[in-house]
Image 1: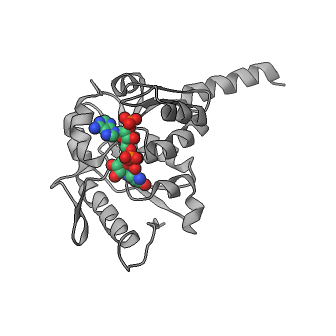
Image 2 (image 1 turned 90 degrees about the vertical axis):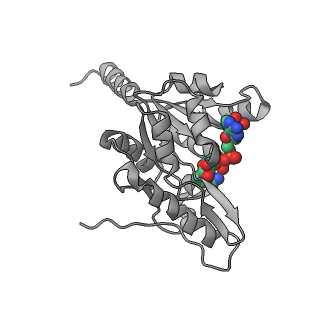
Image 3 (image 1 turned 120 degrees about the vertical axis):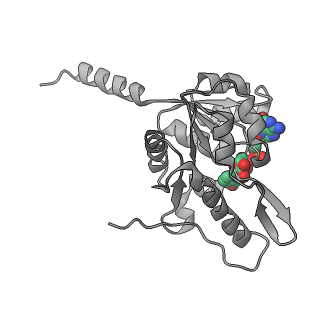
Length: 229
Ligand SMILES: NC(=O)c1ccc[n+]([C@@H]2O[C@H](COP(=O)([O-])OP(=O)(O)OC[C@H]3O[C@@H](n4cnc5c(N)ncnc54)[C@H](OP(=O)(O)O)[C@@H]3O)[C@@H](O)[C@H]2O)c1
């Protein structure tokens, strides 16, 4: 029979082997949604903030759990295996370049480059934020994810009344698999929509979503993409 102490040690070693350090750059709505979710899956969370010692950031760290901390954006990124860019969508190039060498790390990009017009929101770049980030950090593995839904649905997918899909695009299959595991652990469904050249269209999905959700008489919805057998 397996010695229970050895079994516990084995399980603890396995859990820590699978735990990643995840830097969440920014401490706004998306950071507050994803940080505690990833911490609940056993990962260590380091928030990267321009002002890491404010009461609001301290409270966020406390709400996230024992293995959470906060520091500057560049220090958070340097410690991490995975970097989440939960930052304003029109600033991704300068923020990515300010984070130091991100080679070998997975970058999760939930951002949307939005421009407000008299007709609603428009996609504000000709390529995509994911491609802009990949160009700014060529040695990193960029995965676009989480940009097509509201932060409230991220933490409570049931509020949508049915399954919610998270489209993933990026050039590394293994990085997409890692991000898909985080998504599964949140009760959402990851779906691989191919390489980073498709990020423009995935960002376009948000334009359709946001213009129906806010400021129009149209019906609001969440995406559910059903896979064929
Ligand atoms: N809100 C949503 O439901 C939602 C859903 C999906 C995707 N998104 C996308 O995700 C991104 C983040 O959205 P959010 O709602 O979390 O935004 P947010 O609440 O405005 O938070 C953005 C965070 O970025 C940091 N930041 C702001 N200006 C900065 C600058 N000049 N340089 C470096 N860091 C800066 C701030 O953190 P510090 O003050 O701590 O530095 C701020 O809290 C956006 O691109 C958005 O389009 C949003």
